[in-house]
Amino acid sequence: MNEHDLRHLEIPLPFAPQRHSMSDRAQERVQIWAMRFGLLADDAAARRFESLGYARFSAYWCPTASFADMLLVAEWITLFFVFDDLQNQAITTGRLEDYDRLRHTALQVVYERGVTGPVPPVIAALSNLCTRTFPRNSVAWQRRFELNLELWLIGHARENSFRQAGRSPGPAEYPRLRRDASTVLPTVDLAEVIEHTELPDALYFGPSYQEIIATTADIMCLTNDLHSLAVEYDAEDTINMVTTLRDHRGMNLSEAVAEVRRLIDVRIADSQAAAQSITAEMDALHLPPRIRNGVRRCIRDCQSAMAGMELWDRTETVRFTPDEELGATRAIDYNNGFLDASELGRAAPADSRRV
Image (cartoon, rainbow, N blue to C red; front, top):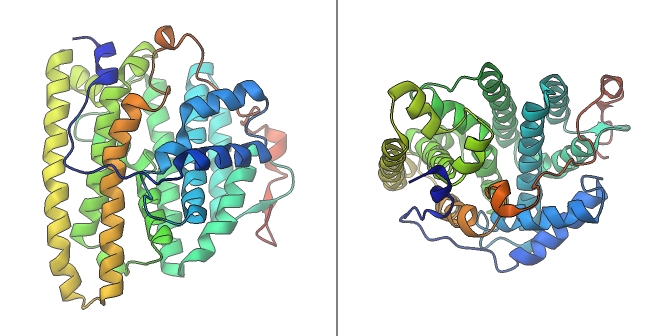
């Protein structure tokens, strides 16, 4: 076995991948959205964007949502991938300070729910999504969503610190770091939006739903660590559980892969147990059927996304295909998405919450 064999390794999951019937149309519409904000500068960027298929992956998160709601999630997930791509570019080109400026400005946009004035394309796209999303649910939900967006960007900063140091996080630290930076946490929040429901804080922060969120992130991240290892190994990326097990436990590739698969199985069992135990918590809170049904749909969406990512990683995107197999670069520069210092002062809070 070598790291390239893992690209097409099927990892069985006991969840059904349910895909929205209009996923291809969503990919087309999200590409138009990305071009509207200047993220895709030319036809070559548009072709690469199509082959990456970020919106098609999003379809697994919202299999029965309305097309409009599915597009909102697809645009958010596309934005998350754009930030991830820019983060990778910052690492490989030595522009971590530029990425930090971008990350700080993104947090400002989240806190202010939007900006006005000339800003880089990725910030304009984020501002657009904030103005359209935050009003959809209550102040309590907005607080949770803001927190999880903050954790995502802080997670990127922590990942970058390890990468810059050329070190991998330890096995105990790795799951929390990877979970925060993965964007699964805010995407689970978006499930409440598309399911037209809202979990009370007492249930959301209860042990069962917190475990559902954590296991969804862990299973998706560990699965991705195996499928993306060839690309990350070539780039000497230190944020991968296989690398962590090699560096901290002295495992060879076969041993580390076997351990990651064991960890996935453990988290599957934990996820299934949490999906069962949440019933008792809903009973104790005397939640009405409408909320209970919404919770079950959110859990179904998480399960579909876990299975969908496993399938998408292997068969539906070029994102994790090594360059020597791909024959062309995957990178999109997103119209020079990094912030210049001079642009920071022009990013001001939005009065109208519109861009």
